[in-house]
Image (cartoon, rainbow, N blue to C red; front, side, top):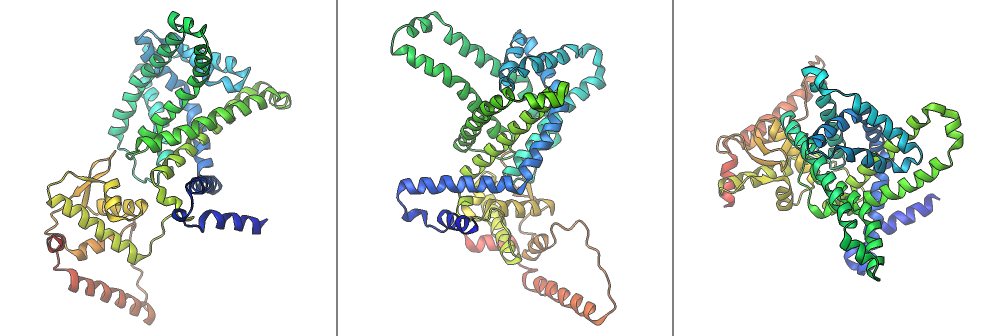
Amino acid sequence: MQAILKKITEAIWKVDLKSQPLWKQLLISVCRFVYLIVIDLANGQLNLRAMSLVFTTILSFVPLIAVSFSVLKAFGVHNQIEPALLNLFSHLGNKAPELTSNIIGFVDNVEVGLLGTLGIAFLFYSVISLLTKVEEAFNYTWRIQKTRTLAERFSNYLSVLMVGPVLVFAAMGATAGLLNNSVTESLASVEPFGIVLEFVTKLIPYALIIFAFTFVYSFVPNTKVRFIPALTGGIAAGVLWQSVGYLYAVVIAQSSTQTAIYAGFAIIFFFMTWLYLNWLILLVGSSVAFYRQYPEYLLAKNQSVALNNHDREHIALNVLLIIGENFYNNNSPMGIETIVDQSFHPKQAVEEVLQCYEEAGILQSVNSISSAYLPATPLENLTVAEAYAAIRTSYAVFSPVVMHHDVNGDMALSIVDRVEDSIDRELGDLAIKQIIQMNA
């Protein structure tokens, strides 16, 4: 079995795509996509984050529906929320009406006027915490360590909570109105328009799911996600969601044994399992979008970028010079995508050094969503030695100096001090701006 797996792995990775015909390039690329997604799942982080989101969703689902219900009620379309939940829980089979009824009952019992200021604050906090958890999970799939600030979370998330439900239900209402229009009904009686309309009617649920997932992949990660990668992830997740949902509905229909075992808790069991599968599918789709936007990760099996000190310092200085040159040319601040394109370095490595420089006060981020960077200190006053020191001493929460009184300990410390002194002697008078001017 291991020999077979080894041959398959070599056939996928140890091949030059450019030398292959187009159909084979496409096939190998798809195999690499699947391979990397399986590796992501095997690492266990996607599973853990999906399970964490299940717990947070259970705590925040009713407050989320309550907030959406309040917004929809202001527009007079709150009556559509029950049919929407029934459609959302359709994969739970005959459990869907019971679960929907329970949730609507909880929402009806939420009297905003009786909650008070503290209660309303807790209501919104529950919703924001859910969306924050979702962002952190998506940021993981996109190899992003920096999250939005608290102010940005409130402004971005609340705008979606206020506008999102209205747009969703408006789209659903417009679609239903279009399909029930007298002109549409007349066309349905004429062939081949009837077949086409029937096909479109069956396709609309898939299109709405794909649209919703594409929007999530574009908005939630704390980075600039291009439309095509987001759409690719949306299509992959949408197809998976419908397929897994169909299989799950079949399983539930034949789950008399589980129903007998769990009795009244069966609906909770099925609901939690369904939530887990949905979150896992969403995270898998996010991974697909990531690999589509950064195809360089399909060129090697090792997704994580492990840099030695030499490469890390080289990338850091190169990135700093690129940002500095762009700044002195009076161009707009550079985003991570542009820096990656110009430096030809892995995105993960670029993000690491940018984070180090930002923590050291050498660079500053002027837009957390697009991650555009400017010098935070005049580069004519910043020496190369100081730039090196920021990278060499990064990730250190504290630096305890343990003084050993043996000969070897003193000798090791003296050698490290000599290395630092030599860097200061050679590069202590060379400013970053001087290097930029020499390259101009």
